Image 1 (cartoon, rainbow, N blue to C red):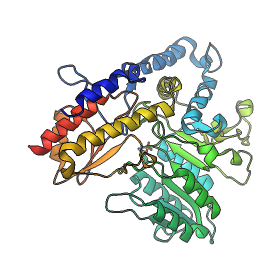
Image 2: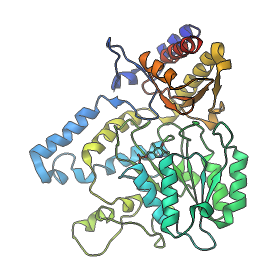
Image 3: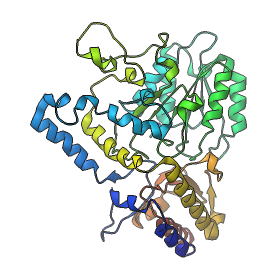
Image 4: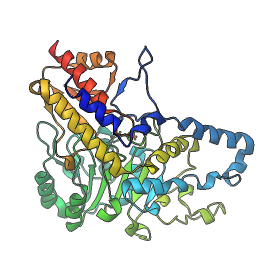
Length: 418
Ligand SMILES: *Cc1c(COP(=O)(O)O)cnc(C)c1O
């Protein structure tokens, strides 16, 4: 097994090594951990998740409704206490962050505010092959405002392997910018694993008078982000992929500070977005919270948010820079281990340049069909499959090892050569 020795050495010297023990790893039938490379889809469970959820259950059972305002950690401030951690992960002030709803819902809410088309400026620029939900969201928003998706939606074209060239993004914005209301792109594309130049796109969009937002589902907890500094207008993400907060976890949204006092921004509103100080006066008019919190509609579902708390505590004790350093080394080892013996049977779709990628590597396997994927599962490799022949592999620096990468490459080689 080429690279095994190197991998074992890297694991031994890994400053993040102890984090793996903080997670519950799915096991094979002999009780050994499977090779779990699916953190891009559902991150693993932090061991403390159960405790945090139990803590809410206990408060509920002992204090009932009083738990909102009583006890050591009243529920009323529960999500507020998590915002600094999220802010560090996405590079935003805590007032620019809210934890609420789910990703698709947040995109709809944010577009309801930031997509305000006029006859001269009504288009939305997005990427071809965006995640289906994003396509449905944008199409439905355009129709809601009485426009025709075929006219109002501009898709940036990609190449045969799902990659957007930076030049084509720039050209599309230059060509359509003056008639575009919103640019909404994925931070990392779900299928290719390509990381887009978020900062540049924001600048190009703003230069044309467009608002610029990102779907950060595959970028958050994975790629370095400085949303505030880059001037990104709005963003949303889910917390169940690289943020390890459990299936269907409550999501997050970001709204740049420049909109926090902007009364021209409309919202779909609910009582939980009302300022905390006047919320319970039960008045008949909305008194918005200052910041992203104004987009929260409902009472926070704390049993779900408790798992986010458990996960964020782990992120708090390391940094995106440190995770990223390990992720780059893992990717280098993965690409080297694959190129070695089976390079001619595999096309690596994800760009090799670290500025253009996160943890995920998408592999197109020549002549393969879904049987290969089933064989990988039987060999205890958990990854995912996208038609017609793409495997997505995401070694996650918090809980995967270098050894797993080399073992995976060896399993894949044997399956392909058989
Ligand atoms: C995972 C993902 C979603 C899922 O949205 P939910 O509302 O959380 O189901 C949406 N968009 C992208 C780009 C994703 O990767």
